Length: 206
Image (cartoon, rainbow, N blue to C red; front, side):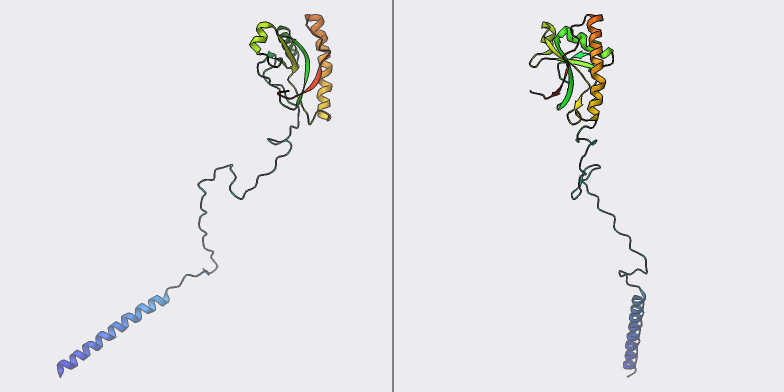
């Protein structure tokens, strides 16, 4: 009988101990706050944006638009006269003139006279060049003194030719060409006075 009572007592003590341990664990869990969308007025830190491995600086990504080009931007219409390039004073094998641009063609002269003309004009403040007439190689033109077109390198885009910008260029250039033409002919025994000079729109292939 004593052994039975001792066994029941041990079982009761074990059950009480298990209950106490379970109660403490439950209390600890209840005291731990559960994170929800409300953090007491503190906004959660947003995740870092995912970097597009294909995108590169300056390249448009999907969904972006491109601003339209207008006057003065790359690819837009020219808004000022074409300035002379560094080929002044030469007879050239490659024509430096730009398409749809008006150039002052002074004369068609044999190669040696054309060479003297472009050097004289350039030295006197009007950068000029010459190219053999179409279909003639510059080496052949030099060897056989073939005709070359003499022109000024400053051009006027067709969009400006009849406007105030084009008029200013023409009024500045034309009297100076006449003056230098007379000077070249009378004092340097030049082959032309450039009296037949005229503006012509350059259209490659025509």
